[in-house]
Each structure stands twice: as structure tokens, then as C-alpha cells.
Length: 225
Image 1 (cartoon, rainbow, N blue to C red):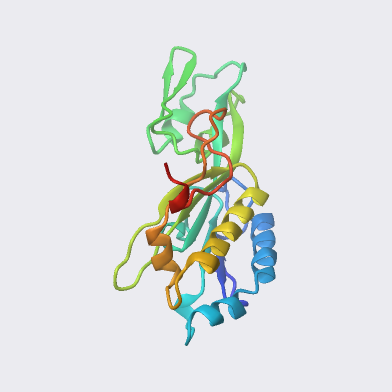
Image 2: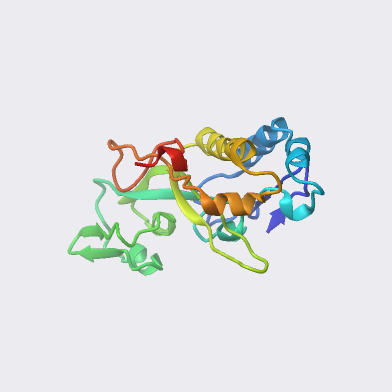
């Protein structure tokens, strides 16, 4: 796993380059995220909210190319993991069972010549797509799963699921909006991790999107029904 050093009051980590398991290319997202966070001038802003300011006050963001999450997105303030939804094409299945054997979630079955996907078990990792020799399975929707509120330390906790976005810009916007909400609504001396524990930043659901996928948009405490 590679990671960049702290810069301007935040830290962004990412998984290794050229990983064959990657469901999405994280490099562009990483570069765009760093530029956007630099624009927020977080070091100065946080220094006005927290005094004295230490390393553990800086936002920690992790980007992973797939649900395996080698860069540990589940224990960071913000975690972003790539996903790719398998889709069944009209190409004839070779009946090789390669996809069934490759799925660690046991989400695939083959009935005669038909592939059946259990969507309640599929985590959209893309393993089945990489081993299919015929193109019967191909890549459908791709994007990023976003989580927030993870941490280690004295009282560790896993991050909460916010939802999914379909492109880099949506992911960057979501992180930026969440940080802006902390800056404007967080109390003096309140750490980001405690603020994230107290708010609901779930992505607004798009009723036109199937399979639990969601569109961009935050729901704060005062917006909840």
C-alpha cells in the first residue's frame, strides 16, 4: 500500500498501483481529491477551530480500487471504494463455472446455460468479470462506495455506509461538502471523528436507480424526516 504524506492539513491514502483486483481506476480520483482539498485550505481553517491542532485532528481519507480495501477505508474519516456491477450479456456461456468458482461471496450460480446472480450477496468486486472467457459477464455500472466516520485509537469504530456515486466528481464533491458541513456546523474544539459520529450524511436515494445505487447529495440531521 502506498500513501502520500500529510499536506495542508489532511491525509489521503490509496492502494497500490496496477493492482489486478481494482474495480475502478483510482489515480484520477486521487489527484482530483488532493487538488480540491488543497483549495479548502484546511490547515488554516482547522487551526481556527481547534487549538492546539495535532495530527489526529486532520481529516484522513482512504481510496481503494475495489471492495477488498487494502488502504483500510473502513477505519478512516472518509473511505472510498471502487465497485463494478456485473451484467449478463447475450453471449453464450461456456459452462466452465469459472465465475462461480471465482466468487468469494457465493453470489453466482449456473443453472443449465444461465448465470444467476444473487444481488443480496454480490458486492460488485468484479472478480467474476475477470475470469469469464466468453464475455457472458461484462462490466455494468461502475463507481465509488462512500463510507464515513471510521477510526482507530481508544474507541475504535468502523465507518458507516453513505451510499454510492457513479463518478470521480461526485465522490470529490461529497467529501468536500461533508468537510464544509463540519467546518460550518462543528463546535469549537470538536474533532472531525466526533462530528461524523453525530450526523447522518447518507446519500439521498434516487428512485430511478436500481439495485440500491444512489445519487449524490447529503442528508444532514436537520433534513431528516
